[in-house]
Length: 145
Image 1 (cartoon, rainbow, N blue to C red):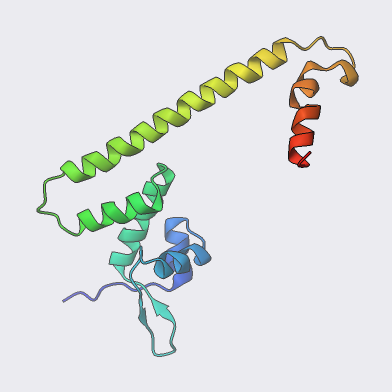
Image 2: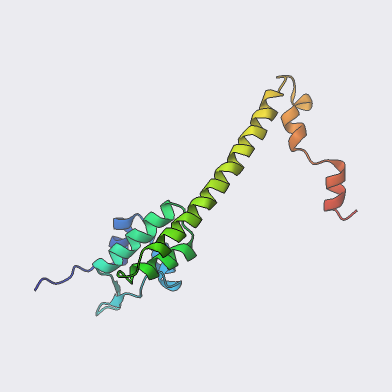
């Protein structure tokens, strides 16, 4: 029988492109199971930790929230279930991404309009600075006046 490979936290972190502090935090919030301990009381991680942390990292790269990842991990632990729940989580995330894209496109249009108004004069006449500066009404409201 082949013994499972074990890793220390630094090796696990490097193998997945994760900071050591992040590995500890994933353990603390329950996304990564608590590791075993060596005779010297160091954390020891196995291949299952490596696979799970790689899954978490990839899901984070794709922008899934921690709660969505938690739900996905719960489903991964039940391989015989239909994948409709996984699909629902992915569709929910896609809708969030599409909303963010729409917001960014609106922001792009607004910035483009501001930039197109630039007369290339002085800063005191700059339409971009003028648009960013708070109005007297906004300043009064912020000060509680």
